Picture 1 (cartoon, rainbow, N blue to C red):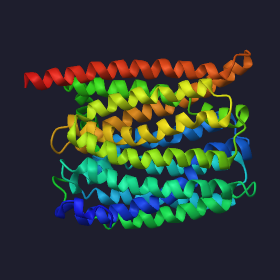
Picture 2 (cartoon, one colour):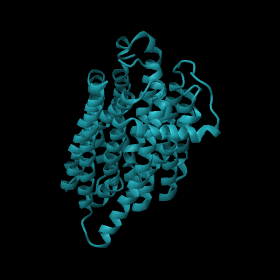
Picture 3 (spheres, rainbow, N blue to C red):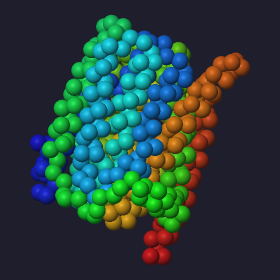
Picture 4 (cartoon, rainbow, N blue to C red):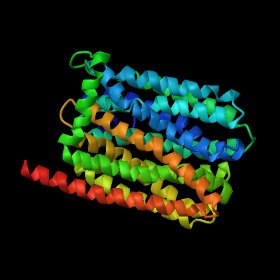
Length: 410
């Protein structure tokens, strides 16, 4: 197993199964997810509202994160990752019967809701099985394998989807099968016995109140959470516009998307290794700030693009920042959280992501309709996105400064 000799003995069993799961998840992800927006718009003629619904769906799962994190307290966290992940991937097997836009959108949405609800449990598992000082690097080894597979599979998937109008009805279920096997591999990870007592639903209000109180009591984390909320709102505002812009304005094909995704995956793979070491050696909040700054260049690139190949910089930056944001957000939250509260902090973070993610795509879709109705160029929506991302970056600067001053006083 690659990099096994760099992983501490106590984490090696978990790493080896996590690495296998990441390899198979790479096939699942790259065969399906880069093409969802393009298939929905180009082949099935999905409306702006339908695409917004599909883009918002993952964040519905985030809204349930607080309650999910509460229910799993005092229990083994691994089943709370495995069962929703299996439900997500099994649901995409039904894609074989889909021929219209809304059934397509609903199936994809159901899969993504199940997938994202697991984030607090996944955070708790990672915190449990990997030592703090090695976690970033070990996770980067697994994600690097995933990115390598994506590099190989995405262009083949783009070619396959270009062979017929309904090729997705075969390719997507095949990709989902790889995902199912990957989840079963992850289920072999050994975690430590749960700490604490099980909870009941009647305690949910108390748990919710205590979790929300984190925003009041931990001021640096509040700034971090609000900056992420603002930055993400700007990003998600344009999420329905990206596939519409690609299809309607740039007339992109699945092969072009596959090739551009290949470029993104190459940078994603290398960046995981870089960011994994970076967050272990430096403050993860610094990594967050760098990635937010880079991310602002994506809507700038789309605003200026007139041909498919003009989007190459966006896919390069996306590869770098997708890896960087995942590693820095995850470790940034652990940086703020108290001992044994990792899942609670992650659940609060996920819930805030859910709120912004459910709202922003529909506002973006409404702006597209409004701009078109009044004869404005929809590309100017990218400028609105840039303003929100820049504001989030300034808030992140303020939050980092507060965290440093709080640490100095301590």
